[in-house]
Image 1: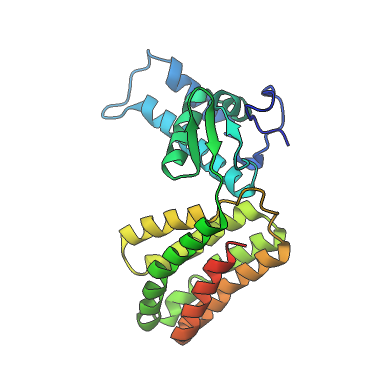
Image 2: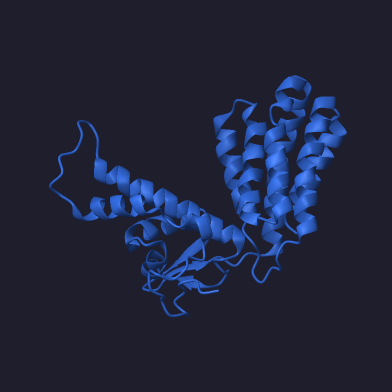
Length: 257
């Protein structure tokens, strides 16, 4: 699959995007272009329209790149240039470069001077370390929540668990990753700690990036992983603390495979 790598030729804008629905909408591309080249528009009072439009496009590009990372469309070890990716998304290199800089701070890519950005090659040990840190943070929180949150609140999270199951059943790894983060974020949100949510979500996102040369996730593994969300809710409702602890630890470990 063509991907705009510096190792490959850059295709024209009419080529199909390898990022599926993540391609930036036409309206956003117009806004982005106007934000870079239009200087005569009077800004609304108290606002900076150009900065807002550019940020909006950058945010869409950032999410598209994150999706491509999870889906394995951005290959570990490959170098991608901002102009080539900009051609694929139908935008200038500027928002792509800004999004890539954000991914660099998250450890997903590294800057290659005068070339672009290389997707980080990660090891099984790194994933194991992430799983360990996530367990150290989330298990105690979930055990506390199991003792204090009423069953009705857990029932409200069933649709989120079912969404992970639906994505897994389709074999849609990218949407499964989004649904998986949404479920865990909703569980941890019941603790009322915003800093916890920020840290846990960052660790969770990092744990979803594929290993170098990793085989595609088997459909059965994805379905089994999703089923653990429903089992976790059952254990939380029953206040079965040993099962809660075991399920969370096994879930984090299984997510590496």
